[in-house]
Structure formats: C-alpha cells, structure tokens
Image 1 (cartoon, one colour):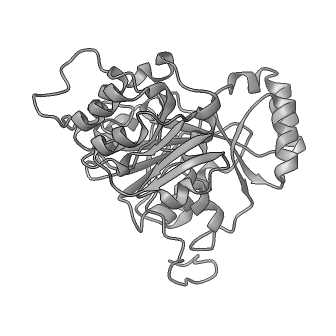
Image 2 (cartoon, one colour):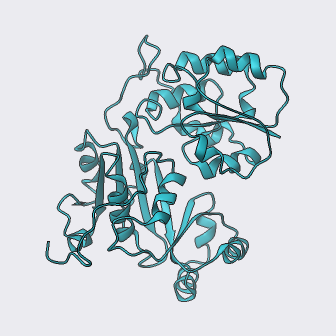
Amino acid sequence: MNVIVSNKYQNMLATLDIDIIKSINGEFEVEDLIKQFTNFYYNKMILDITAIKGYQNIKNIQKLSVNFDMSKVIILLDDSAMVNSKGYLSQLVSMGIYNFTRNINAVKFLIDNPNSYKDVAQYQNLSGNNDNDNSVPNYDTFTGSGSGGLRIVGFQNVTAHAGATTLVYMLKKHLETNYNVVAIEVDNDDFKYFSDKTLKTTTSLDLSYNISNNPDAEVILVDLNGSKQSNLCNEVIYLIEPGLIKLNKLIRNDRDAFQKLKDKMIVLNKSILNDRDIGDFEKETDSRIFFNIPYVDDKKEREKVLDDFLIALGFSRINSSGGNKTKLFNIFK
C-alpha cells in the first residue's frame, strides 16, 4: 500500500491507479511529515514537491533525506526553473534521492522499477563549481541538457513522416498561453508552411547557439530531423506512426530498431490503435509506449489529447478551455 502527499498536483496524482493506504493534501513543514510517517508502514510515498514548505531551499529536502528512507519516496517535481536547475538536481542525487520525475506517467513505473544511481548520474555535478554558500543553487547559463531550468524537448521521427514537425507546431500553440516557449526545426525548412513567423529554423551546427539565444524561454521544442545533436535536449520523444507499411519498412531497414529504442520515450503518433492494440504492440516489439496520439486536426486551436500529453510530460500550467476561433484553414495570413 502506498502514501500520497500532494498539494499543487493533487488532481494529477488522484488519477494514479495504485493502492493507497493514506493520502494527505496541503503544504507541510518537513518536521510535520517526519512526525506523521516515522512509524507508519507503507510501500512507497509519492511526494508532490510543492507539498513541502520551502521546497526551493535544498536544506529542507536534506532534512527529508536524513529522516526518510528515500528509496521508498518518489518525488514529483514541479516545472519551476529552480527545481529543474542543474544545481538543484545535482544535490538531490548527492543526497541519495534517485526517484524523481516531472512525468505523472513515470510515477507508477518508478513504484515497481526504482532508479539506481546509474539512472540519475547524468544529473550530478562532481566538479563542485556550480554552487555557492547559499542554500539555493546558482542558475547556469546554457551548456546543454537544459541547464538553468530551461527545459528542452526533442522530437525524432522513427518511422518515416511520423509527424514531428506538425506535432511540435501544435504543442507550441498549446503551451504558449502559459509558458514562454520556442520551437526550432533542425536541418529542414518545413516550418515555413505554417505561416508562423515565431517558428525558428536552424542547422545542427548552429543548434546550440540558437538554443542559448533564447534566454527568456522556459521551454524549447526541437524538431530534430535526424540531427545528432539530441544531447542538447533534456529528453527526446521518439515518434512512431504504427501503420503496417510504416512498421514493415522500419524493420526491413533495421531489424534491431526496437532494441535500440529500449528505455526510450516512445510515442505513437497519427495512431488508430486502441488500448488493447497497444498492449499487443508492446508485447510484439518488447517496448513500452509512453503515450498514444491519434490523428489530430492541425486547424484546431486546441486538442484535448495534446493537453493530456503535455500534462503527462509534466507541464502543469495547461489550460484546456480553448482558444480564439480562427478561419478554417488560415492559408492567407
């Protein structure tokens, strides 16, 4: 049986299909949590980080780590720049806190598949030059992998024409009402067909520069188009259009394609599969599907399934109320 400690993400955590023995909601001092759970038996504690009063101060998280068995705690991070900064994540790892995520779908996975140090070693800064004497880590300038709180999400087509360009464009529209978001296309020029002058196009060689040239951005979406610069992203989403011809072409070209995608974030796009089909797909390919996106109408201002997808990725400031009505095709902008 599991425990949920929630605050900002109460509604999101309520959707988890897990056995719950106790659930509390609110903002708590670390000492209050220690008193409540020191002698309380549970399998895992799912902890919304915003439920910890003063969670931005890493010393409060340190108090938690000293008094709890952190192998039994899964922390759902918020999307603030501070919590996602390189220094903050590094200190979590240094305290032996390995089970943290921004993705609600990953919480259930971590219950049965907890991280080891190897899984989070990439976040740890061993040089010691990233922090000062204050309790809050410094903000970094861009050096890759989304430092300084900037979240960079890459999109890569696995099957041909799996829809990365259109998906990036639509996700940008969904995010930009609540986030400062930038979309960049690499080594191609298909963005021009969307008649949106805020979309950016660059080359693999100049991608790092184009990322760093957006100091106010909270989120950067990158249509990678096969670029080898995926290391500049916090995470890469691998898109598969699960049509029979597309899949057969993929396997004929590379029989180890799904083996190479092991432990990657696979998303089905332009999909007609239902839940049962997805289960069969996962068994046959020995893979795990993060999300299933059906065909969506790129002329609509909002698609609920894309809001759900962004929430699953950990973007909490999503508004599904819809946007302004536009012309059907908006060809002549």
